[in-house]
Length: 77
Image 1: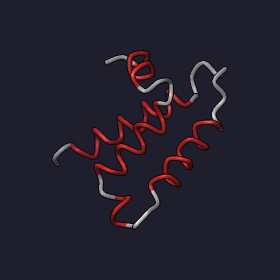
Image 2: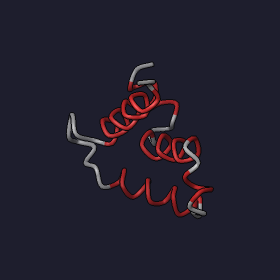
Image 3: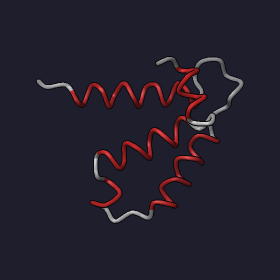
């Protein structure tokens, strides 16, 4: 799946969608008894802090790196 496809599927909100999903996958929201709405807002604010005009270091790149780290953490040693 390409970056543009992920961006389209997430309605252009790939960073908060991915991060929120991974927090659920890793059980972080329940383990730390986090407010899901506040977690979503945090990831949305982080995404808003990226400048979309930067052709490389933007929120799509951040989501790409986050997803790559998730894959790396899933590999068996």
